[in-house]
Length: 181
Length: 138
Image 1 (cartoon, chains in turn red, green):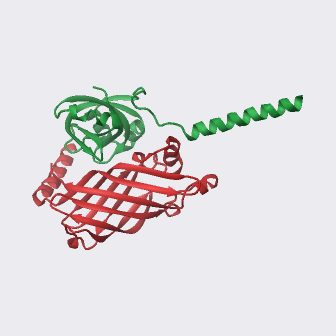
Image 2 (image 1 turned 30 degrees about the vertical axis):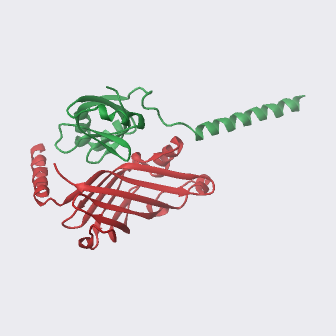
Image 3 (image 1 turned 90 degrees about the vertical axis):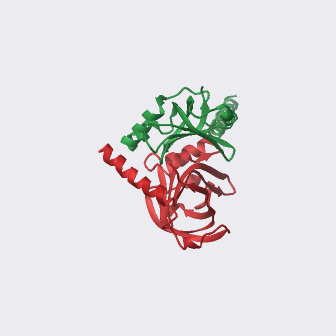
């Protein structure tokens, strides 16, 4: 079984290296911010995995929920245990396609990314606008989008409802480098 | 006299309550350097655990303080934070240790091929096993 797996990955990889069209980052950054009169909540995640297949314009992102770092330990605890239930749903993912990826060049331009966003075990079709810059060395993807907590089944108890925004702004900054083994 | 006693005891309880709530609200993050490691393992061991059964490995490792030893295959600095990549037996996956600010200052002294022990909090597995807030042990 393990050999089959290895061979499979090997075939996959040689494909990639010959075509040289896969771009990847293992330390992309995703942050979110919620601001209410009562308190501001900010969290950073600098361990985001994102892959772009430059031949097809497909994009895949994986995010570990426990990698979100908060200023206050208690907020981080509540986030993981009560809101996103990261023991049950340790990852958030996005799988999609960059529309008109061939138009992306070394001059900053906006393109839409359309795909399925999965948070807290709930999948939702989403279209996100992002700024793209593509050079030989990197594909930069920068932008933001709004996550409505209720859409993803994330319940905020009434007691703290005033402390957290219903719509959370999520920023992302992903610098993909050519994948080489 | 008794009413005074009651009032003062209520006051003491209230002040204590406020103090506890305040302390809880401002509870500090785990200090990785000063906390005993939950698990001691090699980079390859951890990777094998994650590749064979990710769910089981999640329960075993997530949010735990892991002391991991392995051979450095890469070091780099992203956004002023050091990242040390440790080799595993797996062809693609490695253990990525994101260093704390103090540990980042020592990154210059590290060399590729060197065997190192690093202590950090495990947040999970994507292509690689990820440790955050890592400290260099030796």
